[in-house]
Image 1 (tube, one colour):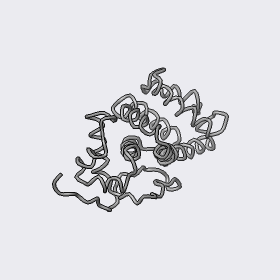
Image 2: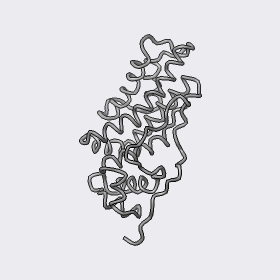
Image 3: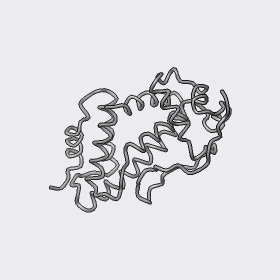
Image 4: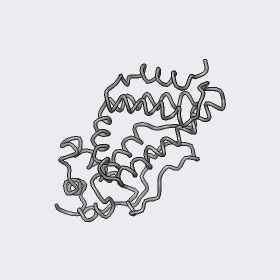
Length: 212
């Protein structure tokens, strides 16, 4: 395989632009390197070219220029590695900015999410989610590190909108959030209804009832 590259420990840029009150990462128990870009990019490139079932840890290690031992030292399984790769891809493509006005923040994120799920990211999401579902630890990691962080950030925005009158809907912020994103993922996973800008904004308007 030629020379073996070493994973850098320099911090990686491009974290989610969330409000400071929302933690950007959970502590890593396995001591994964912060600069994971070469490995994660290699994993996603292989998934895109070969499909998730055909990709192996050996192939990822070879493409990234590291040993399989090094790879397993930082990720216990292919599912865990692919979950990290997808999390990084989603974070870069779908920022959720709590500094923006509530309607602008939620609507722009939901519209971009719908567009992303109908494109290349949607295919990646289906493939990686299917891989994670069969591995409890990877599924928990995906839920806590992506869905959990995004849910807390979105709840912060929805609560602010309810408090300042931007949203006139009744009910708890948690229920409103789950109706929005549950509706989007239901349409995505089962193919009921479109996820274009018009349909997503209709869904948001029906649920949040933004002030005129």
